Amino acid sequence: MTVYDTYNRLEIEITSKCNARCPGCSRTYNGETHPGISITDLSAEAFINRIPKQALKNKRIEFCGVFGDPAMHNNLHKIIEYMKESEAKSIHIDTNGGMQKPEYWERLANLGVEVSWSVDGHRETNHLYRVNTNFDKILENMKAFCNAGGSGSWEYIVFEHNEKDLPIAKEEAKKLGLYFVERRNNRNVDYWTSYIKEKQDGKVVTKKFNVVQGFKSSTQEKYSNNNITKNNEYHIKCLYLHEKKLFMGFDGRIWPCCWFHDLYNGEGNPDVLQGNTSVETHHKLQELDKVYGVGWNSIFHNTWEDILGHEYYTKVLPNTFDDKNPNYRKEDAVPKCYSKCKNSGKLRNVEYHWHVNNEITITNGDPSELVEQNRIIAKIPNDK
Image (cartoon, rainbow, N blue to C red; front, side, top):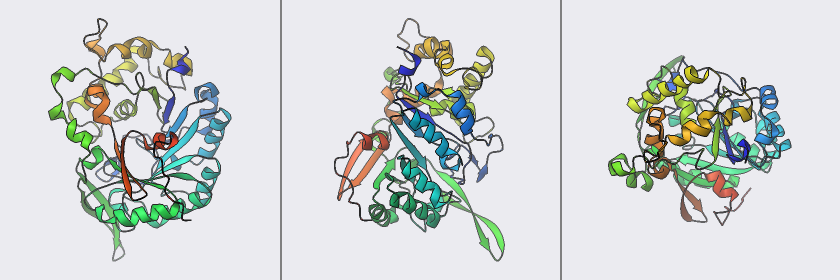
C-alpha cells in the first residue's frame, strides 16, 4: 500500500478569490472580505509541476470553496485537462455561478465536468444570501453550460426568505435539465446578517438583511449536541483516515479535511474562530508549524509522498480519535475533530432532498457522489 491508496477522493480549493460575500462564509466579516485572508490562486503551472499524475489517477476530484469559488480561477480548464490526462475518475465543481463569460462554462461542459450550482432563490431572493451575485448572470451561465451538454445539479439552501421561490426554482432547473436538490445542514440553523449594497439617488447605500433558518434536517434533530452523550465523545470518524477523502487548500497545504484548512487560515476573523473549540484548534494547527517546520504539509516545500508519509499522518493523527486506544495521544487531539466528527461523523452529515419526478428522495452524503453511483434512479426530464 502506498500513500496514493490512502484516499480515493480529493477536495481542492484552487483559489481564495470569490465574487460573493455570503454571510455564512469564512471569508466574510461584517459584509466585507476579512483583511487577514490571503487572496491568491494555486496557479496551473504550480499545480502541474508539484502534483504528480499518480496523485490524481482514479480519484474523484471535487473543486470546492472554503474561502473562494473555483470558477474565479481563470486557468481552471488547464488544470482540469491535466487531471484528465492523469486519468482522474471524475471531476466535480461547486460554484455560485455568478462569474465568467458563458464561453467559460461551455468549455467546462465540453471537458465533461459535473457542476453543482449553489443558487439559493430566484431573481428576487438569491442575492439576499449569495450577496453580490446577479441572478440573470447566473442563469445565463447555467444555460450556456447545460446547452453545451453539461450535467449537474441546482443546490438550494432553504431560508425563510426564499422558501416561496422553491416552485419556480424547481421548474427552472427542470427546463435546464439539472437535478434539483434542497440542502439542509448547519446553514439552515445559524443566523446571519447580510450586508447588501444598493444604489439610491446616485449613491451606494448598505442595507442589512437578516438571514433566518429554514428547515432543519432530521440529522441535526437526532444528533444535536444535547443528544450526544459523553459515552460517544470519542467515536470520531475522520474524513481522511476513515472515509478516504483528502483536502488541499489554495496555499498548497494538504489537510485531513476542510475544517483544518479553514481554522489554520482563520487568524483574526471572529466569525471563523467562534468558541473555544475553534480557537483551540487554530492554535493547535499553528503549533504544528513550530513542531515540524513551516511548510511541512505544503506541496511547495515537500513532495506528495513525503507529506502523506509524514509522521503526523501515519502516527500522530490516527492516535487522536479513541481514548481507549493504548496509543491515544490526548495532547495531540484536535478539538474540531470532536465537535464535527463525533458520533461516527453523524453531526457533519448533510441531508439532501432530491425533487425527482414529483417525488422527494432524502439522502445523506455528497450529491455529486450519489449521482455518479446512480443512487437517484430516475433522472429529471430534459426539457431543453
